[in-house]
Image (cartoon, rainbow, N blue to C red; front, top):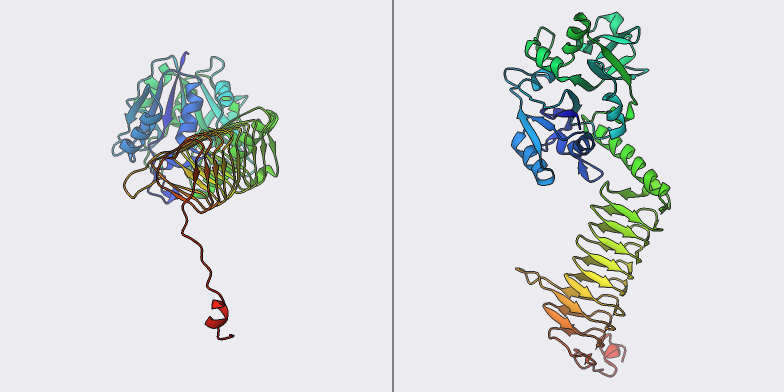
Length: 430
């Protein structure tokens, strides 16, 4: 890898109207900054993230998920702006790709196109019918002449439709020479990274415009932008998996996390939500079911089932209104209206309607282990810690508090009695 990457993530992001740093807002299960880092890591072994607002919080989150990321804290008080963000940043390769941390839709292919050729600067350019809000790019004879920020545009320049997409590939020698001499003689009194374009042109350096798709270089500055970006990324994710053989009923109603994966022939019905780093293998997820950070293999879930994190279902049927949490079920049937938490259930076992594993005593969570060919009758409570071995029957309505033995019938009920003619006496009809 012969290119460095610098990701600008120092902004406050006031338009997000949130205490969460803008770049940590999630899109399809992952912070938007992490989408940019993932694309960068496919291109470079030298990545620097420039921080300022809530720098420690953002750095801590990055370090939870990535190693070998460099950090630079911008001196915003003395050098505000994108040009100021690059002051003091050291890159080790001969070229540096400069990205924005609020561009979660950028792809590795798009970035790779910006690194090609031997121009002193490659810059991303979009043609827009309505360029309002963007810096205008002045192009002459196929070369960039100047970038003018909208606030500094004269009326004629505002008519230009080629705009700056905000991503650059710059030779290291250009950065080392120009960044220290950028000034803030402009309407905003900021140090603009775009000024290096004008400097390069004045010294007859090559500035090459690379035309890019608006969608891939879309910045996220508000909750509305966040929602639009989510829609775009979801469309990409679902298109990818449908091309790989996943069947989706009404895909526009389905949510799939960017970390999820599918193998074999899978079916997702309408309203399904696949969250976290879930793996779905040859399974059928029915209407309005939710899978969270779990492994589902040769199984069906729902409709309206919920599989919570750290669960593993193999050759298992989970029906409507069944919730599974941090449990492993192999060859199990749980048709409806049950909660199975902190449990292991083995093949051939049946969990009746209304069964609950009582795994929490108010202080600690406890494990329930159920063996093979166990029949748990409806409306039973299994009070953990508990071990039910193979070949046990638990009668409906039983509260199980003690371990059983193979072959047992476990039964816990009060005796039923009937009081003759009580109904008529109670309502005065006798």
